[in-house]
Image (tube, rainbow, N blue to C red; front, side):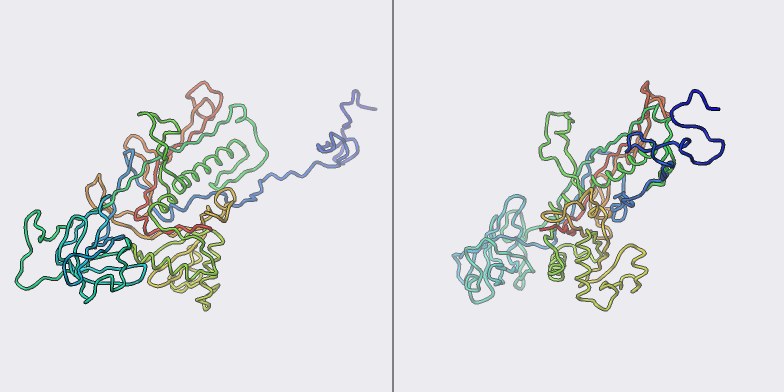
Length: 483
């Protein structure tokens, strides 16, 4: 007896035994040819071939997040305490005793605040010569100095025609029984030096993203079990896509703070908020390039010499004792090679003294520590610089290979509070008020997935944040850049 009519070539079998007439064929490559004996083996789980793909976490390790209510954050940083001038020039004066006139490059915020009877040091970087003397007279743009040595500054090796002389005040010297002249305009009066500060500002940017899935697709069940970096799991494909959109957006929150640039072309008509006229924001890399230190071409071959040059420069800045190094892979290996050459008695050439000399403790914290000179350093890899989809794709000319970030806090003057406050050197300010918190907003619109806000037959998942990065005392940061 035969089944009539027969549908295709599949004949049911009374028992569960594969036969030429009862198996289904999944052979797309053969164009529907019924030549495959069994159903294909389909894996139900995704293969995590890129491991943990998220890049955020850097700012959480080195800074903090604080709310603000304005379109701009303004802070003031202290200037140097002592009086010094660069790019001065030296010429002969009319008086005797080898007197010289030292011209100060006043203007652009630079004024002469040196007083009569101040004692000064003159340094010539071209010849390495130095001379000391006492100020006999002053004017708006120069001072007359008599050398202490029985020779003119020119005869002491200080190039007269050079406009690169450095001069700084180291004290004063008065005769017995004298008084300091008083009154505004009195040339003999000491100049009252008012402390000055440098003001910086940054503006927040609005970061947005969206994921849309139609109502029909929401009812479709996928056959791939998913598990993402944020713990989401399940079988509905649209949930995976929404989860990955959120992860990508959270990465954008940090990447925007690191890569942000001010828009030099902004300045359209008042109220213009098109993309071409947005002010932008100054990120970490831009702040260090503008106000910090850039180390170009750090390699293992010249590692210790290059690194010691960095330390000498830090001495001239804030001299922050503890610093963190976030490095790209090759630069991290260069540091390992450098340490191995000078501290071979430690595991892998790395010293762990900062962690009670415990390698296990250091590695558990994700850092390896070492000390050079009077500074402590904590070194770790920065995934953002290694990821092939971001900075890790290019290594070479002008590539970012690492960053040195000072640990701890700095003191700044808050314009709103009207007082000095302590803040981490690196921190994020986000827009928030009692009515709206824009640190990280997400909401649903549409008519599917629990949203009932419009007639759109879809679910729209919206993400928004408004924030900027404050890089305080950028002169203590170092950016490692490729040749």
